[in-house]
Each structure stands twice: as C-alpha cells, then as structure tokens.
Image 1 (cartoon, rainbow, N blue to C red):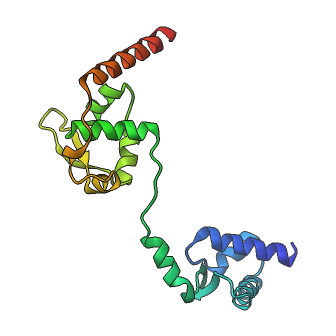
Image 2: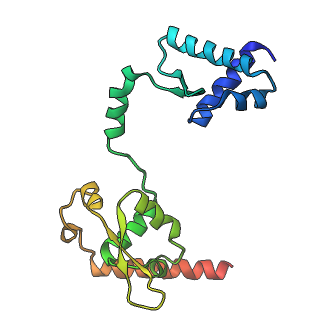
Image 3: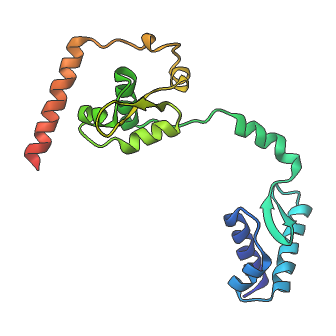
Length: 190
C-alpha cells in the first residue's frame, strides 16, 4: 500500500475507535511493522498540529488517540450545554398525550388506547426525559406506571398539568368513532 493510503487508514481507525489505540493492534491489522505505524501516527500528529486543525493525535501511555486541542474546549462546553433538540413523531406525540392525560398509566393501558405496541415510544419518551416511571401498579405482575416529568412541563410551556387543554367530550367521541372505524377497516382488510 502507498503511504497516503496507510495514513488514511490509520486516521480512520483513530477516528472510529474514539479511545486510544495501541500501535501493535494497528500494525497487526495493516500487516506492517509497529515502527512504520508509529511513523504514520507521528506524521498525522505533525500534520494536524502544523495545519492548526480542530483535532489532534495524542500519545497516551504508548497508545494513540484522536482528540481536540485545549483551545477548543470552551466551544465544546458551550455546545454541550445547549438544550437537546429532539423530534417528536406522531407516534411519540400520541403516546405522550395519552400519558399526560391518563397518568399514572401502564404500557398495557396505553396499548389498549392506541391499539399497537408502545414499548419503543415509551422508551424514547423516557430517553427524552419527557416521561418517567413513577411507581408500580398494585396488580399481578406489578406493571410500571408512567407519568410526565418537569421537563415535559418546561418543553410544552406549562407550569402544571391543570394547564393542559381540556378535550371537548364531543371531539373525544368523534376520535373514538374514527379509531373504531379505522380498526374495523384494518381487520376487514386482513
């Protein structure tokens, strides 16, 4: 292999691994001498340094790792402190609405309302810190009970659940009928 190709491979290895990598492992993977790997690593480190790039190759206890220079830390901290943005799909919004209005609620109750499994949706909502486990139901199997979090209130600009819009009973009945019709069409089509 040509030197430039080897440099690219070594760079890709360091980038992908994230943690420090022993040159012996790289040498074994590339089937070249360890001294040649160290030469490649040193060349990469020198290039990044000379070009004042946003990444560096650092030697740590005989291993090498790709990292950022200290001059960039303040910007990384600013990015890390920014609120996380997440996208709520229709499925997640529907599941979140059920939890918000019915809490405390079990997955089985959510699934009964939605008509489909909700494991993934609830897991994502927990990951987004909009929903949390708030206890267990005193019933066989002791299913988990879910409710909304303070992050939910902040995200939707309300200070309490009482501020959530109330549903018009006529609309609720229309939604139920539409859901039943949809379920009937799905059953007939099967």
